[in-house]
Length: 511
Ligand SMILES: Cc1ncc(COP(=O)(O)O)c(C=O)c1O
Image (cartoon, rainbow, N blue to C red; front, side, top):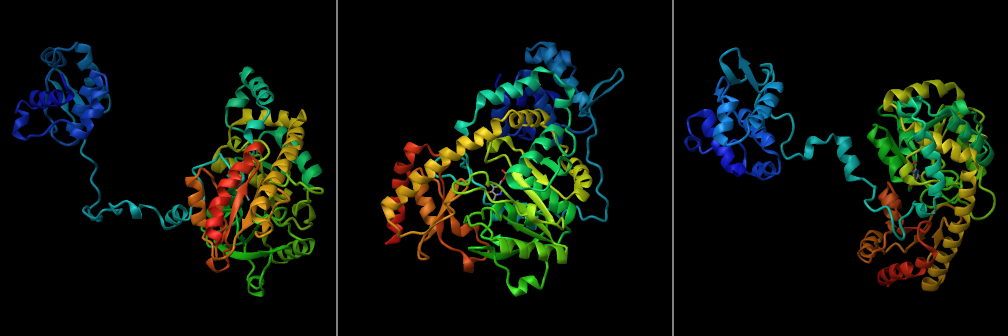
């Protein structure tokens, strides 16, 4: 029997009045196709349930006995009994002792008279169902659906990750069947990992910290979110670099923080007098490697920021997302390490060194805030994935972390050189390159008459992913035209060909 005829039959049989009277079915036609896929007992259950919800079967109506219905349908009684029992359990049907099975009263509770019943609480078009900040978040979203391919910025070469070592370490914790690996994690994170991170940060980034100040998060987005929730109020302001990482802007705005764009020059953030007169609650900065332009904040600018933060009780949020990859000279020390007034919150991530899908990052807070942050983090997010944190702690302790950084630094430096040569080959020194000394991407500046968004669209049609620099700016007036090119994840022997395709698109727009 097809679902449509089952639907008609059920309705006729159950109401005894005949479906043709109303022309209704027990299920809408769009649902009939979906129903067809289900086992017969689920079909009967769904058809009766929908008819009750649509009030086609009125409250109090008696249903035929499961035995009768099964006989008439030519099915086993179990099939019908299953459907009835499910409907009874969910409250759509009720049994009356000795009398049979009836449609139960499932009318919705009354909405108080004081609320107008006919006024929809939301716009049925769906558009305005988002809050103002939700709508802004979606409208200005910077996140990309593509995460792999030449020249996707910010992506490490995950194919080079030592999978075997990692799976050995992870298996060790799985094999143990340990309850502490599978329950919620400690608020601030797995102790051994916090120790490893503290040691690494002290040595490699001159961060002034001990393990108690380290909090494990699921990345920089969550670290920033936590800092702002615990130290900020709705309506506070934050200075952000202009241009900046889209994630910073989105997280801040979604928490009701007013973002104030601060232009950057060769020395980093350049505040105007008008800015300095109005101290913000937060200063968000990428001093070791400005994102996305790549400059390093000068010592004098760093000292000025720290002094200003101490005087005006401002929190500096330092995003140190990729400093491990510096291809000339020693990596620069962190801003946090220069701070003697405890005004810096330092954020780091394993996304670039390990792999982005790991979703582990860390936050370093002043000692006086450490306990509160541990509680706050657990209260907000109930941390977990302890087995990953444990494996990562071993990965660091056994030296794989440092050797992976060393290996990748050599590989990325080689890829950077190949890309620089390809750029020179096609454009000589006609185009300016910024940020080519560190990180996983560089920025190719284009003349102001170019439309970088259009170039990116055309490149995408040729299978090349690049991101338009202008979209990273908050103030349209200062927006520069250019392209962000990630080279780290592109195999060395594919860089020249891929760039050749991109160069073809760029040349068309330069003329
Ligand atoms: C400046 C900057 N901060 C933060 C992140 C993201 O870090 P996470 O993956 O830990 O959220 C990125 C990623 O590209 C970035 O470029």
